[in-house]
Length: 243
Image (cartoon, rainbow, N blue to C red):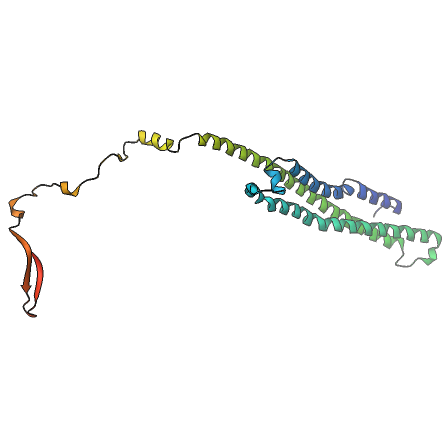
C-alpha cells in the first residue's frame, strides 16, 4: 500500500526530477550530442567521415553509414521507451490528481462517493500505475547505460583508426626507402639450390652417349621406297633402312 496522496505527489516529483526520472531524458539527448560533438572535434580523416569533401577521402566516406547507423540505433531504441515514460508520467499525474479530488469529496460530501470515486479504488490505480512507471523508467535507464557503454567503444574507434593510420604511414616511409629486389638478393646470396641465371641452355646438336657410333647401328642404305600391296595391287610409299 502506498503512502497518502500528499506523499504520492512527492514520490512522483522524485520520479520526474531524480536520478531515475528527469536525468534519463537528458541522458538520451546528451549521448547523441556527445557523439556528434566528439566526432566534429577530431582531425581528419575521422572528421571527414561525417563531412566528406573530396575524392581523396573515399575510404573515409565508406565508414560514414556506420556512424549514421549507430546514431540511428540510439534514436530508434530509446525513442519508444522515452515516449512510454512520458505517457506513464502524464497518466500518473492524472491519477494522483484524481485521487486527491476523490479524497476531498470524501471529506466534504461523503454520501456522494460512488464505487468509481472511492479513494481506496483510486489509490490502487495510482499504486499500479506508479509501479508500471518505475519499471518503464528502469528499462529506459538500462538501455541508456547500454548505449553509453556502446558509445565508449564507438568513441575509441576513431582513436584506434588514427593509430593504425600512423603505423601505416611509418611503415610506408620505411618500406619506400628499400630497393624492391633487396629481399631477393639477400636470399639468393645465401641459397645454394637456386639455378644460376648465367648457365647456358643445352644444344641438342651436342648430345653424346655411349655406342652412338658403333658399326652395328650405322645404316647401309636409307631412303623412300614404293611397295606394292598384295591384294589391292596398289603402291604405298614408306621409309626403309638397310643396316
